[in-house]
Length: 155
Length: 155
Length: 82
Length: 82
Image 1: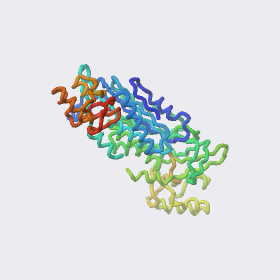
Image 2 (image 1 turned 30 degrees about the vertical axis):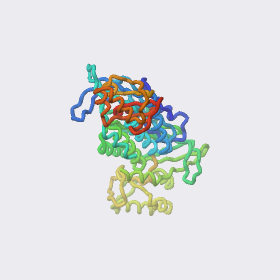
Image 3 (image 1 turned 135 degrees about the horizontal axis):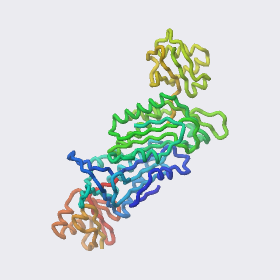
Image 4 (image 1 turned 30 degrees about the horizontal axis):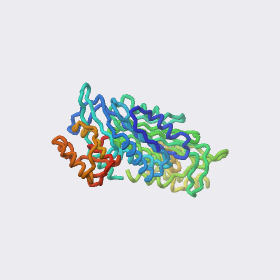
């Protein structure tokens, strides 16, 4: 289990290689990557273009929360390796925000673990997004969505 | 939608880059990779080490079946890009067999589409595996598992 | 003629990758299967499995589906890819 | 003392990243919240939200949980990472 909370970017291909390195027992690898979109899907239906996304986090608790979520996943499913990376700081459209990867002997375990980790990360890990429109000096805090809290109910 | 049935290997990192290239609308990318294990999980509980996996396929129908499965996924979920690669021929332990990747504005759509495609691919796409133990000249055909057919019922 | 293909363990059991079957008197896939099974005891045994899968013109099909001259019919065991 | 932290929009509303609060007379997080709200109308308004989240010693917690000298308590709006 490997958890990183970092300002730097990451390379999903390199993360895949690490999940697979000397790993001949887990036939299944599932990965999820979240990227910055270039618009904000306003609930009013009006889309606003986003130039910069600023990610604030709670140092210490962010790592602890992700570790706890990964442990819960490892208790529920027979997982080999689990990798979570979450970035903070200013990000541009297209940039990677989050990586979740898991390996298992069973494909459904690997895929379910990725979905589980993302669902809990979305509602339980202390990160906050602020969107800045092109040229804007003040940003808008992204509002939490009820659908994210609802997503936890299926687990 | 891009489907490949090929003998050559593939690079999941490069596939990720293609799914993301100039893609600023889909915040979510889900990927699944299946790799050759170095053992066969015998139902008797006895594990046998596997040196080579030979994948036979039905040329023409293999591509058609994967295309059909990808289309069904795209009808069920709001997907951006879908990529499926399935290899055939002789493979060694650790080698990639299959890649499924999908992008979406919604994380659950991307993850569900990967799981759906893998489930249908396992039971509906014409590929057959034969395992060769170390030094063995004759191999054993892998038997289809009821659990794979059962996995379709949830969709 | 009907272009008939066999894959995987079935191909090995029959020692045959494919053949051209006369379409005369064949109305559905079950009929084609029965005419193939009549080729000998090996064929009868291999084609008797209730696990046998069939594809008509490269799409999964079933035994009661009509087949005609020029069709491609493939028989194979349950698939195990992925 | 209790080490109190504020994040995201709450940090901006209060124009405060954190402070040391006297633990005397504080028994639970709700009490700490009330004493912070008493600092002025800005504080009262910002801390009144029923969406307010709280973490005790870097673990998600709730208002009725006991708090003591030396604890770290963070208040923040619903999280939006991932």
